[in-house]
Image 1 (cartoon, helix red, strand yellow):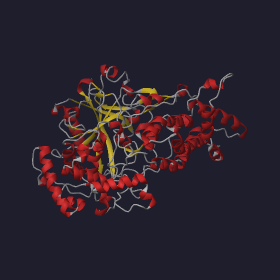
Image 2: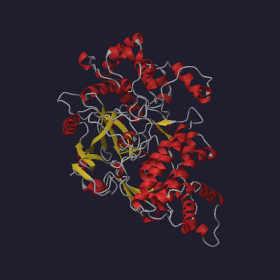
Image 3: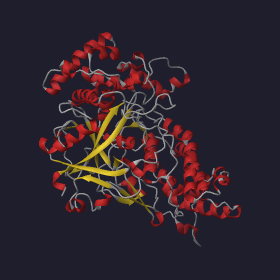
Image 4: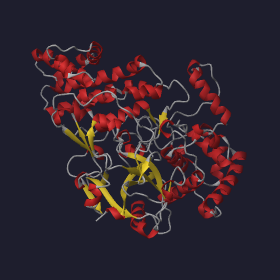
Length: 613
């Protein structure tokens, strides 16, 4: 992502850049027993056509999923590397001394000397293997991308003349070892090591925002790119690729990059606004170019491309159905003009696409997805911030819910915090104290982004943290009642240190910070609820107890998470939603739920030919 760039490698994280200020590395929690594999969660399996089996939730966008037990990110055992091998010189140089066997993973240093390995840049290779398939490429050399193109055609079951379209997520394997605090501060792990999302369209060519970024080629030297296929249930891949290319070509021509991408408002969070953006982009409406808040950073740009590609077949009848008969007809002519300008050739009948769009698969009607006018959009946003819709004072245009009929649901600030903790400080592996401390480390960032004070933040965070510590009791409290007071006192002390207190505060002559100790005791407030579960786990081994506690916690935190997600920013100029470069990686790992009809599969990692053996 543009920002300080050295040797074509980004050194500043994008949308979810954070600065952690609360110490989390000097806690001394008891080392948890290595957990066994969890019971199969309520995760809907993918279908062979690329979508998901329908779930009970009406729109498939609730984002309440538990990471599946086979998610690549927390896979155990040695990684598998297929294809090329990274050279020893590149491992020790560009990639920061990472070992060959740990390439694409992150070692998290926990308090007390414990370490966990997170496969944050690796992916499912099939057959139970997790790792990377390394494919060498060269810049400005179409022939050097032949192996990548052949692999994509094989994976997508394309003919020799079918178009290629895939997303490419650029990763930072050189950021591979650190503490929780470093993960959230200097190591780009708020983005899972992903800092740019573009598209690969075959023949060694990429498209990006800004339009000329990477010279429209790979530029993967020291900065590999995971290549990802988007598929939709019931839609031939060649047809979907053709449609995505059509949308990408006109949206990429003249794309405007925001001046402050780390705090850029992400506006296309519902299907109506996304269609408004596409309509007005084709029409050349000035606000999209003149108002920086409508400019699109890399992942925001490709999110819009993806959602247009899934929802708008490129034929005149579809345009009329979606945008209205009169406007759709005019817009179809405008699209063909824009296509010719972007591609240097006419849009022909052979370029047209016809398929069941995502909004129809979701059971929506044309009038439900109709894009608003800009004035209607502005009126609704103003009403939303003065509370009129909730009070019943507003009766104007309203869009569909956030995420409905989109490839994935945008992340809130609460999701960013949850996803970081779920990735690098998961309860099952680090325990409640470290998990709570990692969440509270984000307090200053959340307050700044949301425009909320201490009281508002803790009102949202405290119930969540209390449930985590109640789960800690289920997992590790002694079943002998006589030993519970000692365990409670010790765990409260560990939590105090995790919140930023010092161990020496408990030594003779030391002074305990009453505010931190008061907070630690408050966070232990729901421990009795956890202790009530001890009869159920008394005969379980440590691994099964941990699994039970983890499942119990996940069930009990849903209301708290929904409340945190629903908290609005205090100022319309602040960033409320995100679609960061890590979004597709999170979808692939089950951290963020994609639409039930949409699948994202990582198939390869593009590496520079000069960095392989």
